[in-house]
Length: 422
Image (cartoon, rainbow, N blue to C red; front, side, top):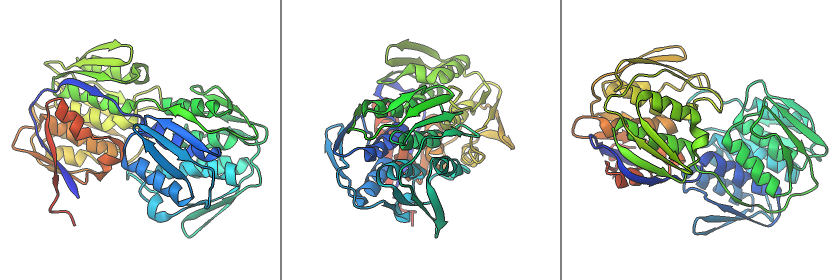
């Protein structure tokens, strides 16, 4: 097992290219199950989560071929509808296979999903919605056993907006009989990207990006030819990286309008931000002002950037309140930041961060994907010999060659074998 080592204190300078979005790649690969033949996906990042979903689908008979940055997916011959626990346990997004499998094959056996320990992400919303479309199911030995002759259109209301729930129903409804209406749908760019891909396959979808999505089912879909969107969370991580190190970087291949809330907060912090089409130029301030944030569903401030922003507030001039409204356990990185000298108090879903002049290098442990990125950012500005971040397999689930990209920006960051790992 590897660890990441950082010697902080260097402002980031240069240019960085953003990879394709993890949270678009996973539903896009899953959606290929809805067609028969060769699908063509461009911009798929090289991540552990992508590798995992490919491995699950290979067990089902799907064939993958890589041509440069293009992933070819042959879904002609499915031999299984089983997603085993050994693979599913590492990634909650594997639940995205349920909708397309039921729609295409009329059956599925999927292990209850696992993933980051950042709080409950109940799949009951998925199951309730699919049941209203005619899916029969029962739980046995940790597996969802589901079947349906042909799904039927339904009116579905989500109690809370759910990204993967909305995506699952989008895929399931694309070939269902009749019309499906999703109310209180998730509006995230990744949901919109999936709708765009499904529409290119012949689906009839309207309203993505709004509270209400309408899907008129068709008999079949053709293979996809689609380029996924750039990763807005990776973009935001590098924007915060430039700000926290008081650096000067250009971020290429991004969609600035997907980060309006983040740009607003970083501008309030004091960062100088300029936008040119699909590029963002970020210059960090001499003095980082304290700013409060509240995580919200899109287009609000994303929960996936809360930990990174907290690292920034640790060295701000003043105190800030960070209110987490999405996941109840998403402050588990706080104890690691405290090891680096951060002054953070937690009261329920709020964290009070009292800015300090500096953070100190220390050995720390990554607890989830975004906490890993938070600790990398903290390490980039920590004083001392070296910050060591263990359990970085979390990081590899969602960031493509992150340390290499930071190296190109001048950071002293590298990987070493973690000899202390079991």
